[in-house]
Amino acid sequence: MISNERSWPHLRRPFQKSQGSGQPQPRQPYPPANEDTLKRAEINIERKLFVLALKENVRGRFLHIMEDGGSKHNTVIVPVSGLGDFSRRLNEMLKASEELPVKDVDSAGNR
Image (cartoon, rainbow, N blue to C red; front, top):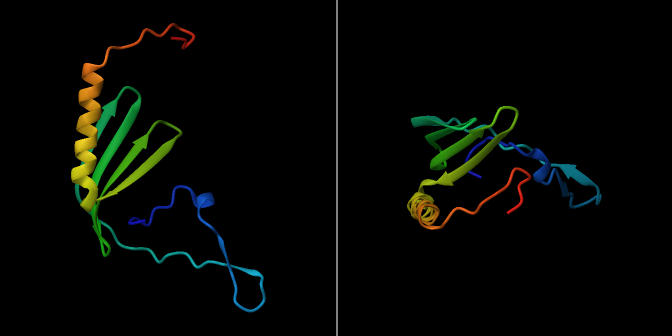
């Protein structure tokens, strides 16, 4: 992971096996890496706020995308090396969204 931010610590493996005793030992956390924000943009869509930030740290540049939906926060990190492919796929989804017909959905969510 490029960023220091750990939104889901329960997904990391907190223990590693030790060589001698066989007892699991807690892993040392990664040291904090200073991040510089190079550019930042905010987008409000319906009731959500999306924050896009181009950042840089000692490991390189990356796009940090944060979704703030009130009480819920989600984060996606895209390394700069993958931004071109990410952009192409996003444009494909936008094009498909414009071309495909919208299905009728009733108030109960049934189609």
